Length: 316
Image (cartoon, rainbow, N blue to C red; front, top):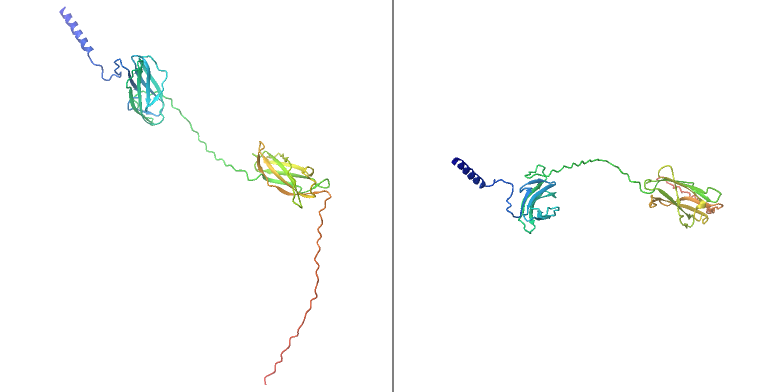
């Protein structure tokens, strides 16, 4: 019986000794002791993380219940939502995307329902562009984004349209009459330089007196007819449709072409031409008589003077 009591006594002494053993020195759980406490799980002080999305993880211990937390990165407060208000022990996660490589200081602290707060937990880390960054804490896996860049090299030679409106011009005939005594219609055919932008062409005409140079006004414009070939336009003008066609006995027909775009805007104008002659039926231009000058012929006299012959006497 004494042996049994001795064994029980040794067992009790062993239990008392075991209860007084200290905790392991490398325990990852910080001392709480019923106070507000904060510790950062990731990243840890001295970590190097890549320039990519990273999840910051920290714990907040608030014995009176969680009222709020504060997370700062380089002294800039980060707004957090969805906090477990009223909870004693909370794990807070925030996905952070660093703006650029460099050194960053991350600070977190806890506030409880009694407005008690701790000094918080602070770490200094470095964000680098090297993909082989040293991570002590566990990263949040981020799927890589592959962007394919296709570079195509195309050489385009653009030839600007020539200056001016016209690339070709045909006018027939060049002699017209007002009335029915001769040719009283003239045909115009043109080729424009820029058929892409010039969709329509207007033909303007007027008369200029051959003697005084006096002019009529321009007509309102004839809309030329587009041809089957791109950029070709034509129009037939009768002398009966010319402005004030009976005003002058003899005149020059002056004309100009105006190219317009799809919306009616003026794109280009041609010079003003005046190489078509116009006369009235029955008009005869005055005859110019040239009177030759009178020439008086004067007689020509020839005077012959004899040359004396010298006499040479022989020497004595």
